[in-house]
Image (cartoon, rainbow, N blue to C red; front, side):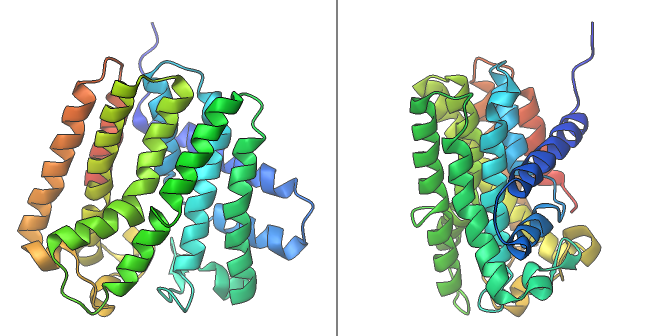
Length: 296
């Protein structure tokens, strides 16, 4: 009897597979060389691939073939990567480093960086639409959900609310609303997409969505904590950037002790949702705990 795979093994194996799949897909495109290079540069910039790993772990919970989700997982990571390219631009967060490496616009210039991000965003939907392993109905559901989670009702809307919240004293409720959209919605897609691909019931999808809501907030609270307690080596960019941009954060609104209490509240709620699922969600639970304890 083989021992169950650990999260570290799962993440390493499938993280590498997703990276290879994304790069191979982009390299196959007939596009200007500099555009292709800029897209691949950011796809290969590292990261723990938390979103696509969540998607595949969700499929694993339902004991389905993980390769049914490889294109959707790659598309999701492409959208996340595009958002990072654009976030780093001078007109947005104006960052020179991402995961310890020069940001895309520092290498390729602002115009190509913007277009590389645009290319990753739009190609992601093509990747799902052309997936021959999924039914037309499943692809339509995935594309609609991804557009909703990544677009104005999701990540993009959250980014605008985040910009508008700079230099203002926000309430905890206002801050949560920003992060539910800016960070949480793509994590929600990660978890729900795995359920959709696996044929989960409406009740199971509701529990997965509740789980994703709480891990999304856990993810952002931990980011806020690491921006104060972490190091540049750990987080891949200068620490204290939120404070320098006069952003409201969980520690600034709740104190560091209060932020850590809130972090563990959301973790407990996430794990409670998983316990109600009639499937083996142990890997999803491990990912939730990793999000809370991570030091990157």
